[in-house]
Image 1 (cartoon, rainbow, N blue to C red):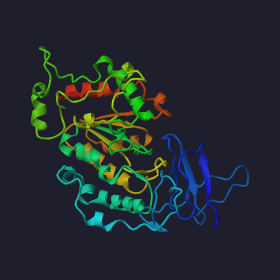
Image 2 (image 1 turned 90 degrees about the vertical axis):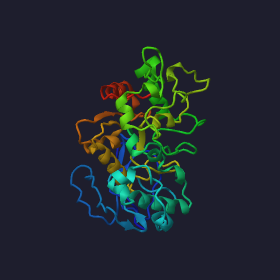
Image 3 (image 1 turned 135 degrees about the horizontal axis):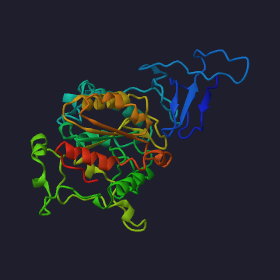
Image 4 (image 1 turned 60 degrees about the horizontal axis):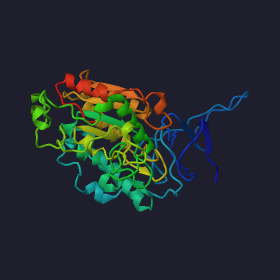
Amino acid sequence: MARRRILVDGPARGAGECAEARAAAASTASSPDVTASPVLDGQPQATPRRRGRPRKVDGAVTSGKVIGGVPGKVPGTRACSATPCLPVTPDPEILAGPDPLAGTGWPDNVADLAARRHLEVLATVEALRAQGRTIYPARADVFRALCTTPWDAVRVVILGQDPYHGPGQAHGMAFSVADGVPLPRSLRNIFKEVAADCGAESGKSGLGDKTGKSGPSSLPSSHHSRHPASRPAGSAPADAPLLAPFGNVSPVSAAPSGNLSRWAAQGVLLLNTVLTVEDGQPNSHAGLGWEGVTRGIVAALGTRSQPCAFLLWGRPAHGFAALVTRPAHLVLTAAHPSPLSASRGFFGCAHFSRVNAWLAEQGEAPIRW
């Protein structure tokens, strides 16, 4: 069997590769700042130059096709995992079953969700899981971000890359982990920036009036009119757990919980550009179809009349900025909070205080970060 040649720009990191079947033209490394470009034998290639090193060539791209039973990849994706690539038949029960997003408002406002594109991708993911792949998060948690923060509740969007790829970490919301799970390094960096940006104010509602009272009754009238009290987002209850400033927490003592449901309950949509990942294989499900779904979500939010703040962290997320077309929205970009890139533009971005200042200008309650 002919061997696949890989030409790498910069160091390659992360997942194993499958030589039996690939439709990729390029692959993305675990860091947003590192890329690798595979070239497949049998694909058209340019003739090497006579002098110097051979020219790097992108292989042909087959978008939306299935080669060897594996969904075709697109530029910017990773090679498949070390697990043998077996024929993939999407799970028909998922395709014909109920929509877990029913009643959230998302399918009513996002064309791709109304067309059940998210279930098509989920059906492929579950077929891979049935082959023995270890995939995160669990099936019940794949759409947790959208279920926790319905369409009408979204005030802020934090866009990440793909779920955590370690056991017990991913639970369906970008950068979040369940209660009791040790904080991943990216989340630690997020908490550090919250503390540096908001200082002693981090974790405070910012809703108190001159008498010191706080709670839902102190919300601006415009907030009540746009966000009914019956929905789960908007102002969190007065007794909701707050985020202690990370800088004030001793590493030995109990750290703040990494469960960001408290943010989601205030209207912060914690969305990844890719919603699933294989164990130990960062970005391994890029190209399966999730990007089309999440781009449709961001595009729909970016055209709605209700203003929304978009925090785009990392290069994959930056590519979604053009989808936000209404000038009433706020779009902020920064480096990814990963240890590989946080010092190159995430630390010091002040996104949390800037969002709260912008929300105040809209007559909205600030987020209790």
